[in-house]
Image (tube, rainbow, N blue to C red; front, side):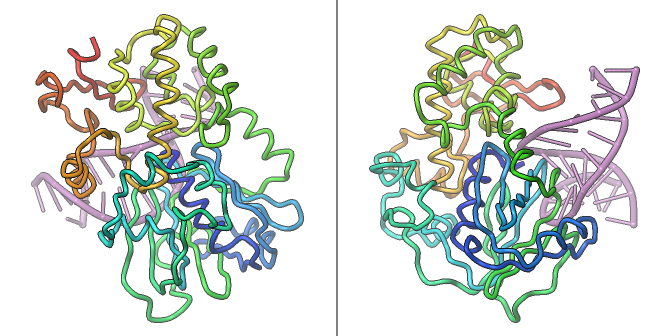
Length: 334
DNA sequence: TAATTATGACGAC
DNA sequence: TCGTCCTAATTAC
C-alpha cells in the first residue's frame, strides 16, 4: 500500500546504492526467472519514480518496471548507504527540528532529484551493515551475520551488488520494458508534483478534474488524473480541503481543486522527507513529536471511523467507495 | 490453524 | 460492480 512518497524514497535508495554498479539479478522464487536472466550482469544506470511506479534503468536499454500494489515491499540488506531521514524514522532522531528542515528547506526538489547528495538534507553517513524493509513504512531489522543473506519468503527479484542486496516481494507489477514501453506507461499517468512542478501540471490537473462528473474522492485515486495519491492521502487531502468526497469533479470550486494540487505537493514532500505519512502539519513541537511517535496521532480522518473529529467532534464516517474504504467528517466536509 | 486485513490496479461482464 | 492477482503480519478461534 505504498503511496507515492514511499516509491520516491525507495528510488532514492536505489540511486544511492545501486546506480553505477553492476548488478547480479536473480529470481529466488522463480516467477521472474526470464526477466532476471535478461538483466543479470548489467550495470544499473538510472532509478526513477513516477507516482507509484518505479523504473530501474540498465545498460542495453532495459528498464525494470515495478509497482508494489497493495503490499509489495523492497528489503535492502548489506552495507547500506542510508538517507539521514531513514535513521530518524527509526527513533534515532537527533536534536534537529525535522519539521523546520523540510517545511522551510531551500529547495525540496533537490532532495529528490539530487542523487549525488550534495544537499545537506540528504547528507550521507557511513554505510551501515543492516537490513531495511521499505514498503508503506520503513523498518530497520537485525544486524547481518553473513552477506548476502539467504532469501526469505517469496522473493520475486533479487538485485545484488558487491555490498548491497535488494529483494522484491509481493509486487503487482514487475517486468522488463524497452524505452518506448516505459514512455507509454509514463504518458498515461497524471502529473506527479515532484516531477511536474511547473504551473502546467496544476493547470492539467485542474482542467481534467473540472470536466469530470466523477466524484472528487474517486478522481484523486485515479492515477491517470494525478499520480501517487492512495487511500490515506485521498482521505486526508479532502479533509484538509474541507471538501465533500462525493462532489462531482466539475462542481468542486476551482480554488479547492487548485488547493488540492498544492496540498498534495506539500504532503508528498513531507512524506518523502520524513518517510511518514504525516498529514497534520501546523502542529506545535510537542504535538509534532507525538504524531511522529504514534500512528494514531498522525491523521485527521483515516482509520478514525466512529471517533470524534479532531476539529468539530462529529463522529468520523466510513463508507465503501469503489471497493475502497473512504473516511470523512460529515460536518467539516458537508 | 484459519481467517482477516492492507496505504492497488486491472480485466471481464 | 465484481472477481482476481500479489504476500505477510496480525487477529481470531
